[in-house]
Amino acid sequence: MALDAPLLSTYEIRHRLWAIQNSDRRERLAKRTTGVGTIARRTDCSTRYLCMIAIGERSGQLEDMLVSVADSYETQVNVRIGALTALLEPLLIVAMGGIIAFVAFSILMPILQINTAIH
Image (cartoon, rainbow, N blue to C red; front, top):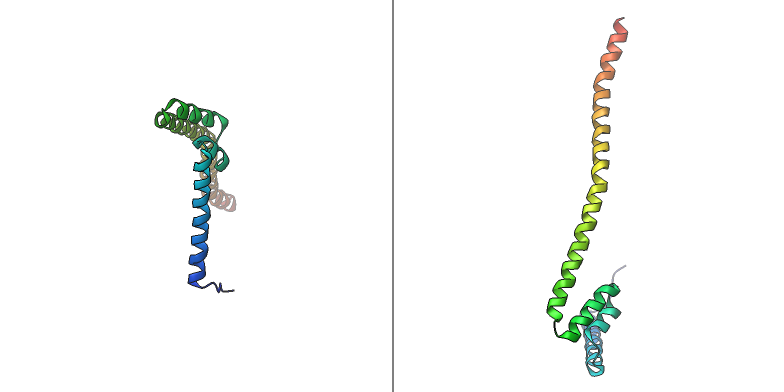
């Protein structure tokens, strides 16, 4: 099924969406919404980080606080990757042992069959 939307109408739709987003920004600026309120509505950021950003806004040290939040996120990701690696390593060892056992069994089985056929 083909899409029969002409190029001009898709351009108009895109332009209208941009205008809606722009008006949303203007409304927020008119209401003097803080960055924390915007982040809280737009993302699923944890309360801890929202509080850190709010403190940075109030103290005038937003840039430093955002760097601190980014470092905290990076540490959290590194811990989770380390935990995943710690769980994955034993599974890989067991899988490799299974493959080696299969290869050894497939080599020894014909030898044992020939040995029983001779006797």
